Length: 427
Image 1 (cartoon, helix red, strand yellow):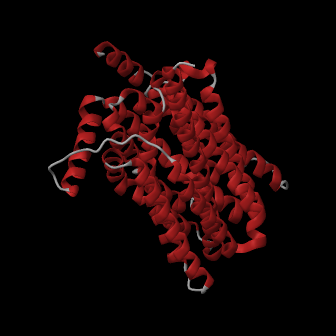
Image 2 (spheres, one colour):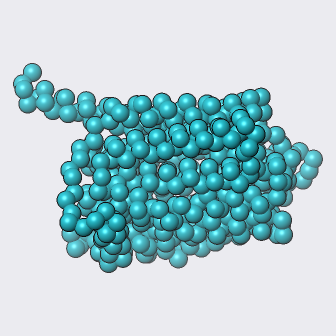
Image 3 (tube, helix red, strand yellow):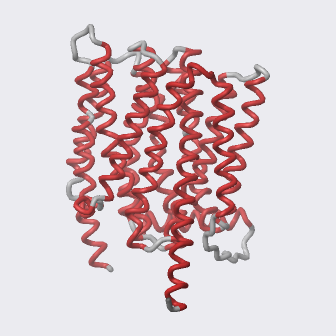
């Protein structure tokens, strides 16, 4: 074998190992955070029994996504990505250890659990742009769609596996043992990330750290608002849609299963596992060669219309005649399953667009800006959902969301096809 061939083979192996490590840490991180949120959500919901209180705590935990995403994007583009990943895992591990101390000394409160969820969410906000901006550094551009699909797939599989395990073990072990398991997962993730090799070019700047980060945020803002407004339109649309569907998943799903249907932790775990499996299916579909042409902004509005249509079973479930609660439960959850398949494809489409079209030095910033804009409506939607669940008929809530999503898709039928055409002509 020629020396050049050996070098190319070595580079390929290193890139493959790096990507495998990222996949593994994504699995661990998602499993750990999903199990933590699963356990704390049940703890809070069972302790309060209030949709409004539960929605308030969950919505507060999403505020860091809005506040810290631009900072996370700037950090991702300016500092060593490996070092940032290790620091994120270390911070998560310390938070879980602190929570464990409060739990084992019987000092944990609802407020303490809410603060922990919020801080873990904050760390994940800083983590996501780092991973997104690291992938183009270790893989070729042609592999980005497949890489994003793999990442979404393993994250979805983790969201499927974690609640399935939690639904069985949580009633037996309790929250104390769960915290130990979650801490062990984050410790393993921290250790394996030391083997990552991500290229890093130090960004020189005469500005201080705070001013440099502020300047980076401004660059991202200028790009998304003036140079490529497709990303701004995409983010604003997703913000409205995510406001609906995140509130359904994080507030309505647990409240309806545990309080309205009066079903067990196992039923809730199975529902979360089913939606996680749906995300795996969405990731697999996105990697299919026959689907490749559909994973583009040109077809974005069609995916939205389809999202609204497949969500309709959640509405019809409440119209089924009693006494079969299990039948209502199956039909209700199936609507979430279908919706998550489509939403996963939309998610892959969004971040692949950023990675393919944006300059490398701006990927972290733009990812962060898109996440920030997309997540602005989520806490609002969660608070509104907590209010509506006890005041409005459930079928009306779900039917309205499906219809509004379909209407948005119809109104956007020419928006992104025109943008794509104009962008191509400029290039």
